[in-house]
Structure formats: structure tokens, C-alpha cells
Length: 346
Ligand code: ADE
Ligand code: ZN
Image (tube, rainbow, N blue to C red; front, side, top):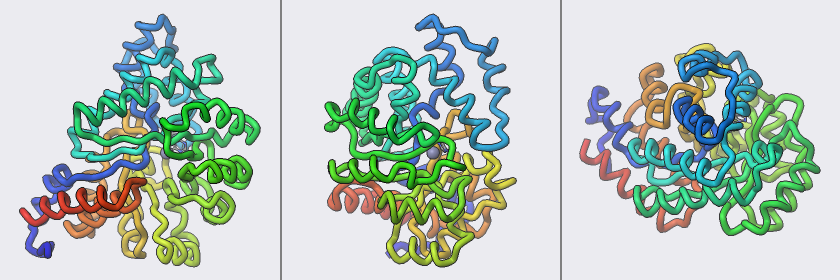
């Protein structure tokens, strides 16, 4: 038994950093730091509409999801060769290892690249090699989830799935991202049905900027196993009850929510309410290069702004991340033991 009450609040930041955790909501293209964008632009002879790293970073003042996506897709334009995808992946894994991430499930957006003439094989080749090296050299286990861009058509998603199928051994599931408003989950009902038939895991962004109705249809129509973001569920008590009863995980991203103005400030974030409702909420970084920090920064910022959060909540959030991951029960049990050990030491 861990005696949470005996852990002084002053220990929390160190515990948040030290505890093993899984990251389940990370767009690998959103981990491209301005320095790497410029280095890859130089290496590939790509012209950027920004004069310097500082000028690019200064443009990271977002008012909503779309204002971010415009810059995020422009940043990804420097990725051309397999090595670029590998280097991007390794840069993330080094940060993740430093944050005691033991497992990461990475989103990637193939359509952002194939629409520029970069082949699916190039994208997945570089990313899957980075996953192997992360495991071998850093001890971070990593899996890939292919995201369909929801502002594009279902037909385009089907074409992407066709491209991806020869590489099905290299990714474990599919997700749905990009502009949420006006692009409800049911737009992708048939392609998700096909993905489920193929034995792929299915997740979707829902209830980030969109209404609770999009979370309902992600559950009922797409039959997703996790909801990415999902914070809008709190507007619908029946939905909260369902998510809690079925322990559908929510991959919450605190810094993202503040940077994209879902909440005006971190102290208005509803992480405490989500946990109090018995939801399997997790903390993640979404697009850390754009939103001001990697996973530990998300934990530290949320716990600093929300004084109701305790050591018990920290332990719960890490345990939730293991519960919500797509790995076997024995592996989860091993990570939970390592987690308990950190907290037992106080
Ligand atoms: N693509 C990258 N980050 C995203 C987010 N937070 N929501 C939707 N699509 C995204
Ligand atoms: Zn996201």
C-alpha cells in the first residue's frame, strides 16, 4: 500500500518527473522543433516563409485549432526523405526518455506527406526504424497509429488505407485528426468499419473543439477504443456516465488546450473534474514543439495551476496511461510495479 497522504506536496514535481508513464497522444509531426525544421529545410533545399528560428517561433500564437494547423502543416513541408522522418522520431524519443516515458503510441499523418509526393513507404520506413532504435537504445517501447485527416474526404482516407496495407505490420491502429468542427466522426464510418475488420485499433479526436455529439458518434459509429481530448464530455452528464462506466480512456493534453484556447488559462482546465468523475483520463503533449512543452511540462503545468491535484492523482494518471495503452496485460503489470516503487519511496 502506498501512503499517499504522507507525501509532502513539495515532492510532487520530482515525482511527476520521475514516475514512469505512457504517452498516448503525440503527433510526431507536432514534435518538429523550429531548429529541426530549419536544419531539414537546409538539408533538403526547401525555402521557408520565415527568416529565422526566432521568427518561426514568434508565429506560434494560436487562437484556435485551425490557426495552429495552418502552421503545423507548413512546418511538415521540410520532411522529404526517410532519414528526415527517422531524425524527427529520434528527436522525440530522446525527449520522451528524459521524461521517463516507458511507452509511446505515436500518431502520424501520412496524407500531409503523400499529398506532397512523399511516398507512404518513405514515411513509415523512417518512423518505424526510429521506433526500433528507441526500444534498442533508449528502452522506450513505441507503436505507430495512422491518422486520417478529417478535413479531407472518406474516399481519400480509403486511398491512404490502400497505400498503408502493405505495411500493416508497422502500425497498430488508426485515428482521426485535423479540423474537427464540421467534420463529424460519422463522415468516416465506412473506412473505420474496414479498419476494425482488418484488426486495427481505432481511436479518434473528438470533443476538443467539437461538441459532445462528436464523442457519442466516435463511440457509437466509429466504435473507438479511446477518445483523443474528449474534454467537451463534461457538458453532457449522460456521456460522462457512459465514458466512466465503460472506462473509455481520454487522452487529455493540458498545454494544447490552453494554447488552442479551449480553456483561457491552465487554472480553468477541467482535469480535476474529469478524474473526479471516475474517467480514465491521461496526460499527454499533443504537439509539444508548438505548445510549449513535452509530457512532463504538461504534468508540471497542470499540477502547478490546479492545487487540488495530489500525489494520488499523479499516480492515477500514470496508471491510467498504462491501462489505456495497447499493450499486453503482463507488460502493463510490470510498468505498474515500477510506478508503485517510485511512489512507495515517497
Ligand atoms: N493534428 C495535430 N494536432 C492536432 C490536434 N490537437 N487536434 C486535431 N488535429 C491535430
Ligand atoms: Zn491531437
